[in-house]
Amino acid sequence: MTSSIRFLKGHGTRNDFVILDDPEGRLKLAPGTVAALADRRAGIGGDGVIRVVRTRAASIDAPADAPEWFMDYRNADGSLAEMCGNGVRVFAAHLRRAGHVRTDSFSVWTRAGERSVEILAGGPEWTVRVGMGASLLTRTGRTVEIAGHRLPVTEVDMGNPHAVAFLPEHVALEELDLARRPALDPEPAQGANIELVSERGGRHVAMRVHERGVGETESCGTGVAAVAVAAAARAQDTSGRPWRVDAPGGTLEVGWRSDGEVTLTGPAALVAEGTADL
Image 1 (cartoon, one colour):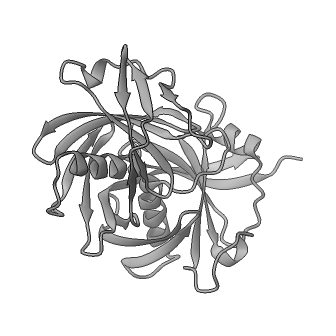
Image 2 (tube, rainbow, N blue to C red):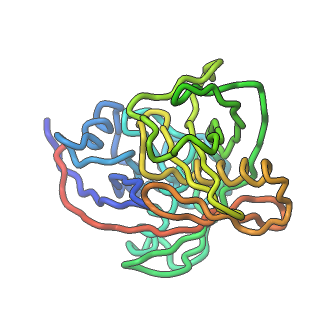
């Protein structure tokens, strides 16, 4: 039996999402349904699907004092994801525009835990700062193979796993072939997002990303944060001053609060809405 549901479409630096407003948790999203919605030819199209649901109605394990709203984020292949930095900004813009929240500073719940949000500029050109939580940086000897080079990887956990590799100066970031996922050695049991990085100047890098469960995307918020964390460590920069990270879809700013929490600041856009048949 076919049913119809209202949807919105949004993006953060061209990392795009299908948004389903489901405050009372009535939708049951099977992986196949998510993949169909995210299909760019036969569906609406997106790098992922975000269900907007009250935490108490989401059928998840959350503490009693968790924030009211839960970002139920799914990758384009239907798999669950812990966090999405660009998605949180779009999620926050929708909550504010829809009147689900009434203030410009609030928190949301994700599978990676609580994330704080600040609306710095309202629509239609939203600017949002997200508290991304603490980062965990490790070097395990893992490598990635790309463009005939085997490069060391810095692993950064931003609530989801990232493998960050810095390119040699003579390798052009723009010319990399990321149609296929670069090989990690050894492969992480749960997979990882892979970021390839070129230095551009003081506190300034550029990146491309192959996302777990999606493929290459034009931006990845947690990936941008992971790249800045790895770049600051590589440069031995402990100043806490912000870094600029350029992705194909746009530029984001990564900063650090006094307690070490990473922040991500950038645009969010809500560009369309309509009805989909599920």
